[in-house]
Length: 337
Ligand code: GCU
Image (tube, helix red, strand yellow):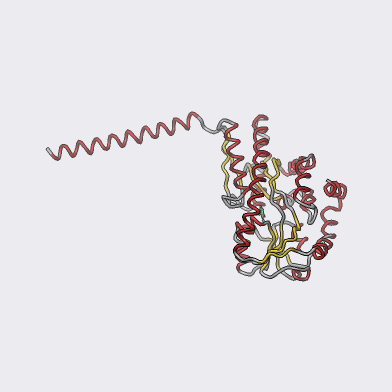
């Protein structure tokens, strides 16, 4: 009798479990069948999960999903999961990856006429750069990468870049002879050579170990990168010279863009611009909080004196001739904006 009751109980449990699983499956597949996204696109980002550009990407993905009624789903892959910036740009040129946020330094390697927007000591301040990017000129430059199979969608902020190293940099002589990491950018390498230092092109994700192992003595970047990639733990002297302001772009593969309906392109473009406004707000906050984290850890912050800054700037004349020689009118226009 006891055995019979036990068998009945076990049988009942099994029936309930199977019924539950089946209904769950039906619910799941029912939902998926009702609302399948028409497109699922990859978005490449090389920063950490909580970085302003990654949060901007998430905002972009959410807006696109919402405004297309779930037809277009964008999957944001951060921390360079889809490859380095130059690998991503290359893949995008033939449609391997749909979206990305990249540094203009990397895009200018494929589209050299974009270098003019990142020349050393070009902008007087952040407002100057944003006047240039927010107006007609900014739109004109967003369309330049089309020749390389890339559509520019919006501009993201990345603040000003400064040098940091294992030894203090207070004068031009201090940086001379140092091995300095630069992005995979010819212009950045020439900029560092013009200062009398030795540039080393190293991919972003490997800068921390290059500094830690003494492969380079220093690098250059904005406060949030210095902090989020933990460079401040190994390069303890941060010299504020604001040598460049390198804008960043949200981009789309033209191979994919050309196959989208006009209405979807409009939604994507609007969402990119809206997410950019959000990113700029987050950027301003993160610049301050990252600086605080680094300073609280006891790093030494050096403000380059105006006299030394003038010497750094003067050393750039050959770099300007090399990269802007045939764009002097555009350069002047940017300076006067
Ligand atoms: C910034 C930028 C990155 C870039 C990095 C670098 O952090 O946001 O996109 O890769 O500079 O120095 O390589």
